[in-house]
Image 1 (cartoon, rainbow, N blue to C red):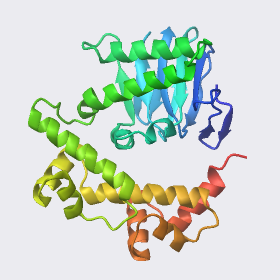
Image 2: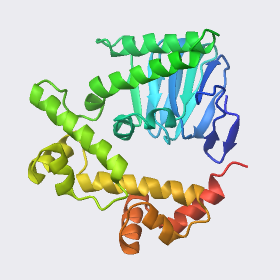
Image 3: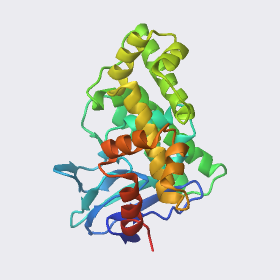
Image 4: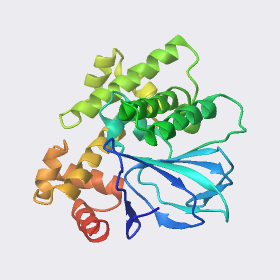
Length: 292
């Protein structure tokens, strides 16, 4: 199933112009530790399957579903007999939709949905996966649009009903909590669009209609990080992209192009989040992860 593995990085060749690949895997073959930029959803159709992430071992039974977020190092172990569907898709499919970029940031590395668990979330995702499988192997009109719609529905449901549980947060029970949730999501969308500008906590709080104190409290409650931690995360993420893909840019240009006001702030923040300097990050990525 893994076609190109350079070090631990798998390069996915999507078979669909949509930026998606569905693999009906029937091989008794294990796959070593690897990671990829796409998101992966696995559902055994017959027999079990084992997914290992760090010290965690997830043993899947038939029709259990596991979602593995992008960039997560994992390995796979297959039983002697069985089959499973493995769906991989480019995160870019969702990033341009409002709130999805924030949702993808909030999602835990792994989400496990058991068929035997009570509740309708597994049933909902299973229904959408079945739809994707049917459309992927068919040739009906608007096939790609149908696949895309089912994928978006999975993530809408995930954002509304599952993420807070997985992060140890709370379900939204009251109108006031719903108001807070929407305010935080709108704030994150604004940050996603303006993080390269000189944003301040007071400015974003005013846009949401809150005092700085109140906004600080609800932002930390729902995002599990402060406003400035989220802002710096966005800027460092942009810097990573520029360091990796724009080799002609100097480190100073990368800093300015990521929203940092000074080189000292850039170096300090980047090292705090990535545990290495921007120059070391560029060198390591070029040496280790670029596919041949």
